[in-house]
Length: 204
Image (tube, rainbow, N blue to C red; front, side, top):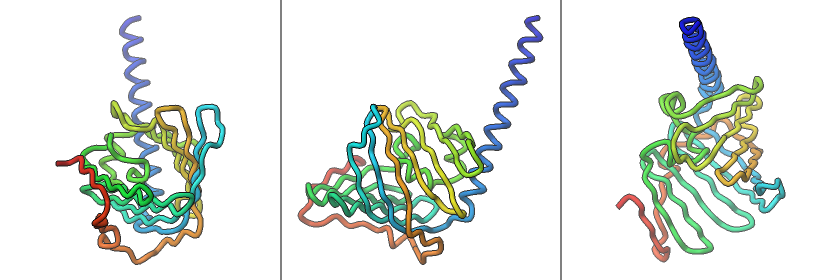
């Protein structure tokens, strides 16, 4: 009986691993045609009781792998820029700039996951395909910063994201005016801090 149960357990583990690989392969198939994107977004934040507590809007640029530009225009003014080495956050209202190194997936934001590479997705995330166009990603790290990332595709591009953070809050992002073939290069994601900003570098 014990040998039977052990064999059954190994079979279940093998089946689950195969399904996980299929889900990641399917997600990578969706991501493969996406090299560069730019457009506009609307972002809604809900608390643990599902009450809307904040909303914002702005525009973004994405160049895979590893580059993104996320600018909030309203209600405040903030900019997040990432390349394969660093992630910058410029709060224009507070006149502060922070820089953090990109060293592993635990420090990566959900947006960077979309701009990441195949090795990152395979090694650092559990992926479940919930519909033909929707994928649920769960980070495997000890302190990843978020619990789940729900990615929805439409017409070969991102339609929306839903992020569940570690405080049981949700951030829902919808994309509009998406350009699928923008002429983007890494220089479009270069960032130089303003001279009058307070700088906080966490890689020095």
